[in-house]
Length: 310
Ligand code: PEP
Ligand code: MG
Image (cartoon, rainbow, N blue to C red; front, side):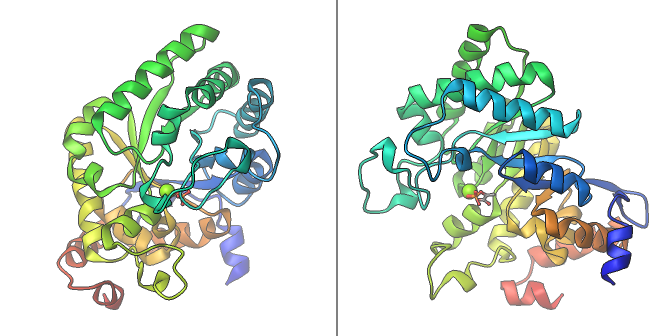
């Protein structure tokens, strides 16, 4: 019942045979982060920093961003805080950036591609993050990375920004949301401190279905075995290199999806705050051995519907 869920929300997601997974939340600001902790989240696995840039007439300057990220670290009280660098482009439009119109924005200059084109935006954000990190731990995550050269360049920019403000060293990771990255995760693992799988975009790009398409979006099912296979490859490569791997797309907040992801061996699940208690309860009700078996069966299924039927 809802009451039982509410009462159990601070219990860890430990399986009946003693395997624990971290449960974190996806948030847009400090208020949501504090709400998420109250709802049982153990950290923030994805702060979508682009929300700071939306619905206004000019970009937030370094000082404003610093104050927001610093407030985030204060709310988190030392818990894990992963802040994603600006993920603009695709469906998220920002008029004052005057970005050229694109025929296929989801395949265009989005996320890391935009940050590498617009180093003014990149450095303002990185300096604010490194300054805020003096007040509590922050991990930096880059969206929409496709090529190893992009993360190599971004790491160098991070180091320059860090030196400019004399900030602490921070963990730097990438979203795994382009299929090429999942397929080549072995090449990326040595270049990053962590991975976080973005199942929303990974599904969109794997199935070639616009995630917002009014007719097709329902078919963009992250339980599709092809998507699960890409996640399994990512986890295998991560394990080989001792790289931490989380999942911050919608699949992590679905109790069945969460069981499969835990069975695949991911280290963390990050979801909407309102899904935290139910996902934790679902994971506490199963053995890790059974979730591993479920994950293996899901990988050999022929469709998302077959996975659901498991
Ligand atoms: C994702 O793509 O799964 C993700 C978490 O990022 P967003 O939904 O913000 O694109
Ligand atoms: Mg995404």
